[in-house]
Length: 247
Image 1 (cartoon, helix red, strand yellow):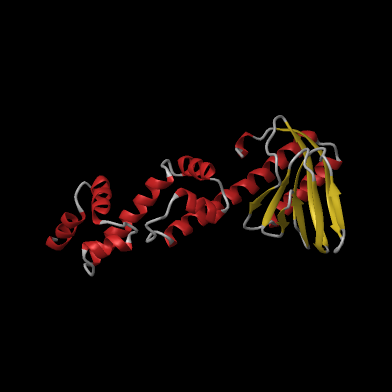
Image 2: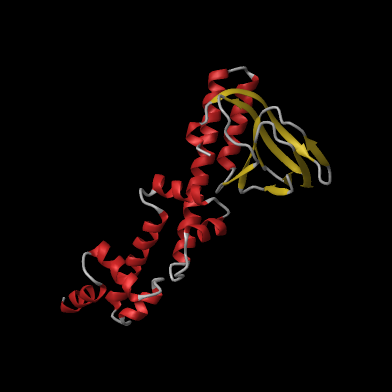
């Protein structure tokens, strides 16, 4: 979902709902899009047997026209913003990880007050601030997750787009678009870059031979390693090592 292209047509209503533990509701053909999160308590949304849990560390986007069940597992309060868009933005319940809901909750109450005063432009302005805060936190968090997974698995010679996407529960298409947008290169080129950076550290330590460094950097053979290294550094790993030793 390209979040920067979201155009709000109308804020329909805003609720701060108390949800009682143990109750189950069914939503059929939802009238509007909705954004909800947890102030306290715990809710699970069930859509086509897929469960999405609402906690203090995520934001839930509910699609227009959706059919789902709401299972209230812990009593608590849940802010909800219902709205319409100029275009379709999603067709299934989507969860966005966030670092903290504190600032989002503060803006929510500002929005609620503005909405009750029928301050349309002010309300839209605050809502866009909420969306910006949600998606900025989500992008930062997702970037951290991707980088950590790659760093932790650089030694894996079978590391691939599919393996990364499956581990992080995202699509390969999303992964590729994410890297192009935020790093300017493909995931494959990013992995090669990180591996060569790691190889340079090992070469500088002068504790391992080329074959050992090759394995430690996730290459199954020295030829592939040397070719990748030369493409980035302009010389072979052995030549680089000799240059360091001569210094």
